[in-house]
Amino acid sequence: MKVKLVLSGGIKTCCSVTSTEVVQKAVREWLPESDELVVIDREKQPWTAEGLAAFAERYFHDEVYPLLFIDDTLAMIGGLPSRKNLLAMTSGHEPFGLTENDIVTAAKSLGYTA
Image 1 (cartoon, rainbow, N blue to C red):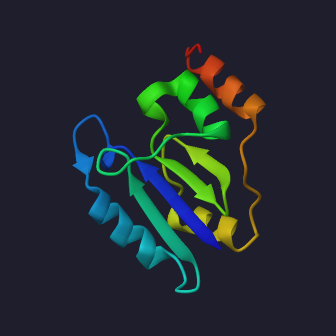
Image 2: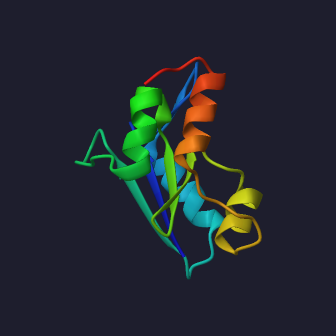
């Protein structure tokens, strides 16, 4: 499996920032060695959202980050799953993949508009 994280300056909460390097190290420790991990910090390297990621960005703007892709399928926006859930997704025990409808529904429920 290929796991790709796209961050925007690490993971930000109301009170702190977890650096891209710390996130990368932690997630690498969660995954089996056979899984590829790619971490992109769009504040440090060029990256342009495409497809569903671009669609989600139109609604959530910078709050869409981090993005989680598994084998090029957008699996999660705005956060990271727990270790248990990530392993369930990458092992095929938990389905993943967002749709445009999922994104619109989430945006509406949170009061975002495109």
